[in-house]
Image (cartoon, rainbow, N blue to C red; front, side):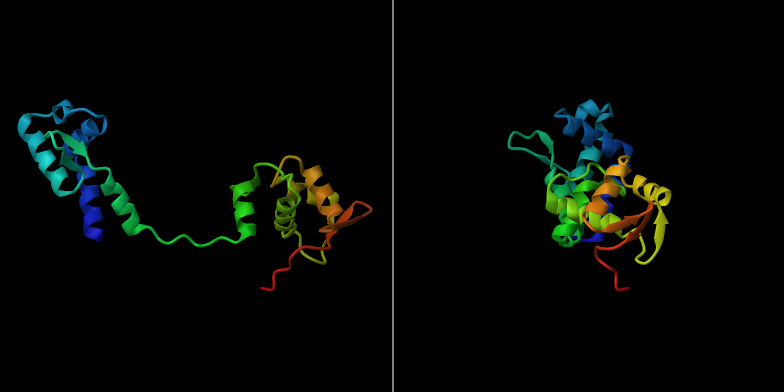
Amino acid sequence: MTDDAIRQVLGLLYQNDTLRVLAALALDGTPEEAGLDRDPTRQALDRLERGGLAVRDGDGRWQVRRERFRELLHATAKPAVPLSPEEKVLQSFLVEGRLRAIPTKRDKQLVVLNYIAQVFEPGVHYPEKEVNTALRAFHDDYAALRRYLVDDGLLSREDNVYWRSGGAVDDA
């Protein structure tokens, strides 16, 4: 499948008459239901057939050839980058950088907490207010996150001052 085939299909979808005829077919209608005159309808069908988007069935009725879209997708799809188990957990719990929910399963919770702990620089002391602000960016229940981070040894606390005391360290 070439870029020319993709451009051809996109060009067909851009044209009002071919799009109307294709839409009528996609809604299990007839080409005539597109509301065009006979000649423009026939020309649109010819273009759709050449582009692989419409075919006649055994009874001579026009149908959308939906497989064409799959062919184009497969031709352009890049192979999926394999995700680590940790990345899969993060992908399922984080939406646009915020937690959908705090995981209840211990192993998943540790993955998420380790990720969150990375916002705190090792060796830097943070007042509780700054910790709360940073954690609120992840979830509204920042107090629970703070408690989990301390309980799991990712943050340490003394006199309402916190510092990172665990978790993965980025070598870069």
